[in-house]
Length: 394
Image (cartoon, rainbow, N blue to C red; front, side, top):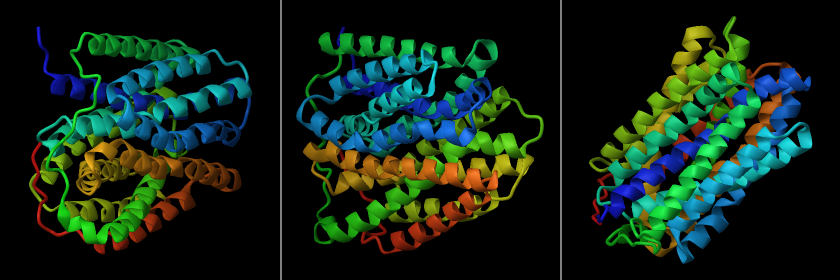
């Protein structure tokens, strides 16, 4: 039976997107339990993720470069296997150094997804905004399920199982993908998307690059700040809340936000990319300002709104990058994007650790996030991309 390679690509890429974000997020809930069991301070334990957060960014460029020259589908196999084995190693840890090593390797494995998976989808889909939107839903599901699954497994088992069981499942999925490639259900070779370039960009590439790099850094920093600190913020500001409840609430927030990625993708196929991008970024300014001081239900609500706007602009951003980059370099350009976006992770972890150490709160952290989004909003206004929608076909 001949299977649809494009559909299978979206299926495995979407699963990979969910798993990557799940593995990158669930330590932020697990650490709350380790903090009590090992009797270490939160700022000490959250700092163990610094190298993993750095490697999610640093590993993106070589992963994208290699996938452009070898095989995106096979790189996805390596990602699933690497995430699984690293997560199991974390679960087998009994002291800080081994947990640090496991988290670092986990970050390196997670770095493969975005430069490889997004280029995989962009070059195999006709309606790219829609495909990226569907794929983006699973990213939101992954972030949400990371906290939910961790909270659930901790509640019924322990934090070690919260690492080990998802790791085993990831390895199984990697094996299934390898079989699909070996049976030629999914192409080993990279496919190309035609008519994706837009000559209107050619004279302004340097200005576009500067603005997009700054924008992606700012969005990456604020995303990492919120994702990393949110479990602790909820623990501090919502009375009598359990680890399981924290995981569940955050899971729902990011699952709903993931749906906005599809809506944003559909809008990107129909309307001005620049307008969508500016609105989605500027709307986050008041959200982070309010997150700085809100508590209880109002905190949950404004966090949801911030996450929704953040997710809605991702397809637009990825299409903009693809439009002014040759398809043979898509893996590399997405690698550069995510070395900037996720490279902000260590800065986020540093700010979270230091601000919490000094204030035992996160108010100033979110004021910083609000100001950053304001700066990014202003910079994107000068993006030399027309206000007309950018049409292209596969």
